[in-house]
Length: 196
Image (cartoon, rainbow, N blue to C red; front, top):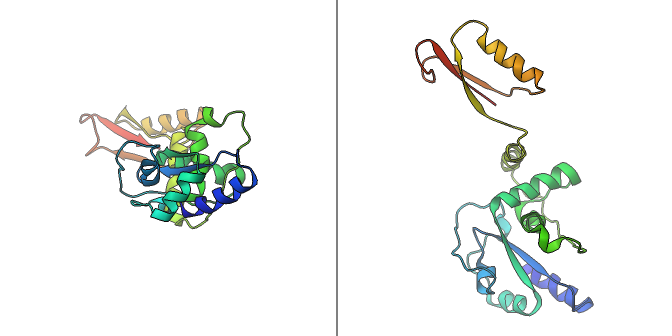
């Protein structure tokens, strides 16, 4: 929130009528709470937006934001993840969670921003590659481009092949299959297949 304090001074200095909106994760909404924009307790825990995961905002920053920020939006972690993935997929821009929070606010409340000129600050590419891979995979699930399903099949030669052929004919692809007679079977003559 320190960076928005400086940006809001500059923006309001150029145009006092500009609306400045900060963004925090619902896991760490300390500044939104202090300024009266959020009235639920913080959830704490791990956040994909580590750069804005602050439990106790500084006094100087808090007072500056009271004067120069019009609103602080609070967004769920899932929206921040979605923003990271969309920025990378569509804009080819890598942002860490805190740097993608502005887009997350637009995604979480599109009516607030619809029909307006909106400037977003995109910053920070400091994101762990494993975390980024996880965020991208989770976005594929949200978009229903990656599915997991389980089906019971007769335990007969060719049953799994027919299932795979049917998925292929529908335009799908299979990433992994678990075919286990011992632990997942419905009964002694069937097998449960889990595919994604």
